[in-house]
View 1 (cartoon, rainbow, N blue to C red):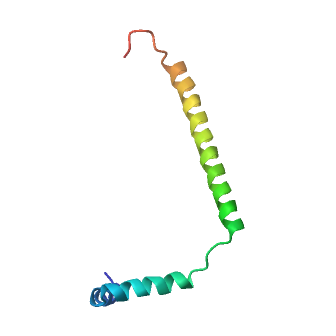
View 2: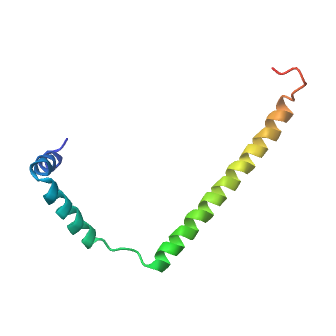
Length: 79
């Protein structure tokens, strides 16, 4: 642990619970929150990426299934 991390830990443990929450509120006020349009575009992008990666994974699974069946076809008896 570096010097600044150790200092931060000592400072955090020295602060009372109320000071901690006041610090959290102060930090949250400094945050630049995204606009509604940014939230919507980020959500649409996330959903599209999840669907795209899911389809890609499904396609690879199908391709490997065909490949492995071609290499070693199952003939009723198992392994």
